[in-house]
Image (tube, rainbow, N blue to C red):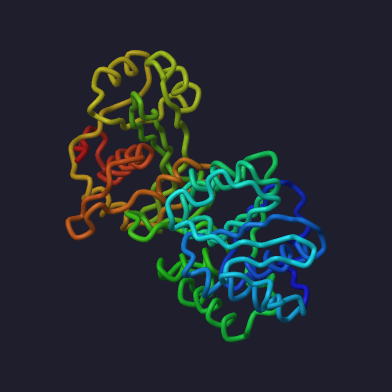
Length: 387
């Protein structure tokens, strides 16, 4: 069988946990199956489990590919294939396929290796129960959106992360390659400017293997880029108690209809004095801050220290959203919490135009200052009412 770039890249991983992210046609699962089969056929007594969210779907995908590889390599013996989910090699090693759609399956499992296919379709607690007793762990997934692996698994010192694309799979058919390239053609113009958010997102996820945006996101008009320093800027601020205090820097280019945004502060459990110190440290002296009007006492305390801060004036959330969606948002690449909020800020009721009021602290701060700047007035002209 042909050794692809994908299989070479995966086989170079050395740590206990392998996180294999990738797009359509990258050959993630097929390559991992080849490596697992080679591991079991070459080593005695290995106990390997391959898991996914649904056993019925595994039969049509992973199990089918497993059998094809076994047949093509001359390893498959029907007598060693039990119940369509268990294969035992001559040397005593075995591979067991399990679907995670049954309660408590996989709990307390000990294994030499466990491979979780489409890991983004199971929850973190299931992953933890499956893998805590495994000597080696492999997960693969399409990055439709950020999920628990990006926070709980990939940052671990014993995890190696790899991102694969269709270009890593030399065995990919020309028909599928053409369809993947169509995502880019439909999503971007010849200069790389996004022209269709749906197809652009398809290209990011399935073409480039990058983390995509959730369908139904309130703001889909954004991309990563550097702040335009020639613009006049202002700062938006949202206060927290259990939620984080949040500040963004914003510049608005009216001619090109672009809004540049950079995350400045995102921090929990700050007292007023600590917050004031951070504001003075992070916001240049004299720059305007437009803040959540619900915290009038805090605004007054901050203002008394000489900081140029005013309260935002009432405006409907949907009006601010409509305003911002009339621009292209350019987000500083280091604004990690802001990017998380953009990916997770979705419509609760799309027809009723009600967004979910959760994890939107930096976005609220952005709306305050954008509404103020675009109003063309220096005094309080937009105060926001939270739904």
